[in-house]
Image 1 (cartoon, rainbow, N blue to C red):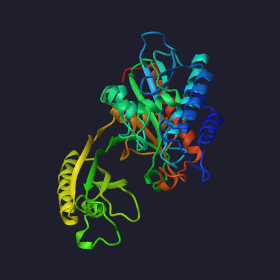
Image 2 (image 1 turned 90 degrees about the horizontal axis):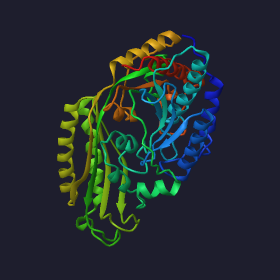
Image 3 (image 1 turned 180 degrees about the vertical axis):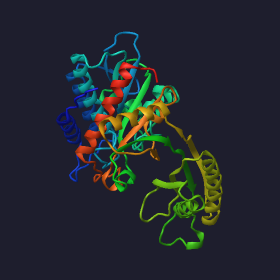
Image 4 (image 1 turned 90 degrees about the vertical axis):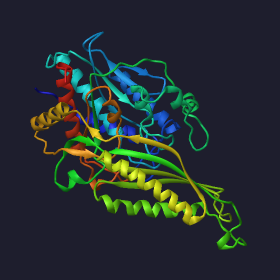
Length: 414
């Protein structure tokens, strides 16, 4: 099958989106439902219209560029990713999957016009709300509401650190929609690897066959606010000290499960957050990640013991405020084979991978065959303004995506 991807279009799309809420060091700063995110959404809606796609926006703000090549009642094939970023994040994470989807849609549109493809399915390119979970927790809110695992009312009520709810933020940027989007027969997401494996082995791309699970815990230490000057050390009840003990214990936990457990504390909120006051309250956002479900269960038990021990050592109170559990699992094996067939047809060297980071495809896998395909990240870094993938790798990934989508649009049964 001859499919012509317009690589210049892909380059242009990547450049245009990277200019939206750009930072001086080459990254982007557009956490979910901020003004930067609004401008990125406006840009995407214009691209949908330019491709002849109908834009649907659902009540949680997920955007879908839809084109009915096979008509009403035909199955839907979906691709896409997200445009929201981490604060001072990179311009490839998420956005590449959206740009690749737009480029593939343009190539498929031409192939259908030329008679190269006879479509038996329709196509949608997606932009999921709050994939990153930077401003609003948890992450993957948009895709979770879409599949029904998170009630819409609960999602709209989630608040950021300033007390602004998801619902209010959607209204503020004008993207609380009322449309009912289609459900997919299959979902394929392109992404940059965000890890060094492909680069280290001199490979360009590969399917994620497995995804790690994660247990995300919000823990809180409560002490006593006091003056940092005259208060004797033995009388202090420093909540941040308890947090420090716990963070150290978390790091040491990984030694008991080498290469199968990652731990982190990416965010700490303290009260009263004054240089001259002993911390009365410290809230930690803890992550436990593993490809093995039993390891996650063990790690949570050990974490609870460490929480109690740290609180006792600092003479403060410690408790768990909230726990989110995301199970480890496998992506669809038939889609994996299609990815590898597309790579072989394009002469692209790669290998099967595992993803430690979460993607919306993990949520979509609960309702249909789903997979993520990664392209090489230079330096293996992500969530950073310096993240980078070569244009030739981005183009290789978009060619893979175009072939897979062409296959699925002609043969939508997976």
